[in-house]
Image 1 (tube, rainbow, N blue to C red):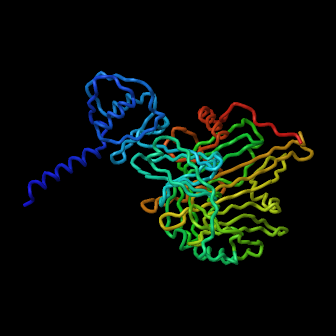
Image 2: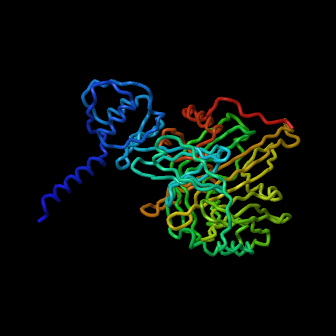
Length: 514
């Protein structure tokens, strides 16, 4: 028989635990008879419910409120206090977060956002990775250092990690993120080579070891990825087209020749032109071709042992990338060869010898050879000359493997009227860029994408998108557009009903006269 005193203590403990961790917005709150300020009501809620409230001062104003009732529910009281703000009520244990949210975010979702800056000079950091440690959940910053993540309220992120090449890593906790947009400063670093790490003398040896360990470092089981994809074009620095999509990617194992399958889940599009000649200018891109930037899966000339003689390789230094030691190997294409090649850098993880990042560009002498590859269709009266082609791919480590995380390509072209054509001497600068970021991964419980539903090499994303519904994007993690592109998206939202007229009723940008 258990002594009665011990039973009494156990009952008290059980009641206390249930009271402090109850997550119930429908419970009634006894109200004081006098009017109170918003902040005083929040103090009263803490005392009455024993919740620890977490909120930003930006949602607390100086109003004084008199509620003509002895008691109301916690939700009714909070709704009364925040009539001028869209605030989501989020429970985390005995904490109640009062999180300001955009109007378009549904109550069962939450957005966290902010900016990543260089702590030494306050300049924004583009393409920094913002992610949850050990999971696929994450995104990247845009050119202006801004990021945004959207997830179900039931999913607790605890903290996010912010990292970027050449900078130290920084952790931001949920208690700060749920209060509203945050500014995250990260410091540039100088990495000192550890004494026990031997500096490699032969860069090709490292690359060969990296290729040999592909099956060990990357996934050997299929998975389903969720990604956000954006493709845009500018003419003389003015945006003329935009395509965005959330896509599903059936990721085939890295240890066989099976190809990935990409399927568009939903998309939106718009154009800033009415009758531009450049609507007929089509360049290589789209969902299918951007997956080829996974160079560990699909290969590329500077990672092909049979073409090593076409390049020079040089070990540059050892540094830190996402808080891991990496070797940097620089490669250059030997020009004057009857095919094209690339110049760039490889970042190889010291511990696992996995490729974690690669930035590369078509070599200057290769642009002429690659023209047919890059330009699919062009206006008859124009001569199209590629000016540059830049690429980047990044992998991130979680769940015991390195995983595809982010890829980007940008192509610059000069279009000029051919001699003998009307208005000869006119020219335009044309730029097209595309990128995707992996925002989620499933390793079980998914169906393989059917081949007939997958994106094909000749598919053009803009033509694949049948309609645009801006409300469809409220609960998706995307790459935040920088301000010029954001203005284009605003115009897209205002012109959904007239697809032929596009996003803006104005003439295309005029070409410059040479």
